[in-house]
Image 1: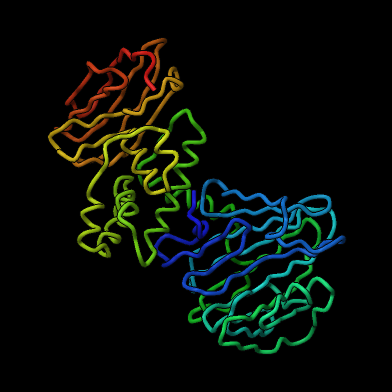
Image 2 (image 1 turned 30 degrees about the vertical axis):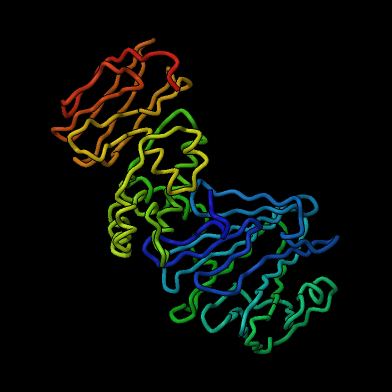
Length: 397
């Protein structure tokens, strides 16, 4: 789940993330302008904001946002993601997954200044949009929609003139032909330290997804027989990692980073919280219900899920309740929670089944008492590791 301003894309440790809205438009961090993508097919121009057949997903639950739009015979697919490197590159790649060529327009809207030299477009003297080659045609307007010259065939060729407007009313479209079954990749970087690079040399979406999986695996991980829940958890963890790099970090974001074991990011977030906000971040609500958890924004969702799976009480003398959120639909299926942070250290558990009996395996810091009140109210242990057969009552959910 993302907020109303869109899904964050970026790299951990690389500063404020960019945002991608529900139709694939990109707004760089701190910018007043945004970048859109339009497609000119054989029959007509298609603007994602005007089309019904637009679908959006995260690739591999990572902050790699894929937006697909129908064109004759297939789709135009835009993917947006962040990569590491000078200028904090955001990659915008558009795939022509159709049997016919089309024209891609990369459209800058609401800018104060736009200039271009070859394949590089400088926007507001702060960002560089770079493509593998110079656009074949271009159009710009001030105070009126650039859609008109683009869609009526009045785009121009040749050098692009520098355009200025202090009111931020510039719209500029840069047109690129894209052959069928090919991909055009562009990059958006901060101009102060942007290298003169070919966007095609940047990692592709598959490599970025793999990198995010590696990042998420260094903290608490869960395996439960609910693919949608695991997917939501992974997407939310990526979202809060990037949210922790915003200038105004919320208490719930820092608390979620801490609860899920992203220690370095949580420590960085704590330093920027005012005293009153720190008190809120240090407070944990009691375990609620799955219904409430699934309806919550990302940070609050992660906090609720942590309580439902490994409930570390504020008082370190109280036991840690594992699988408080056990569901009857999970009966007979394996569960694993790895490296769940608690006040005394990480706790890991696994649930395996022997017919109707469940075997709970655990590994916990010395001196930690574990209970499983929803699974078996009579069971508890203070052993640092072991295995126990539980008599899981029916009807728990």
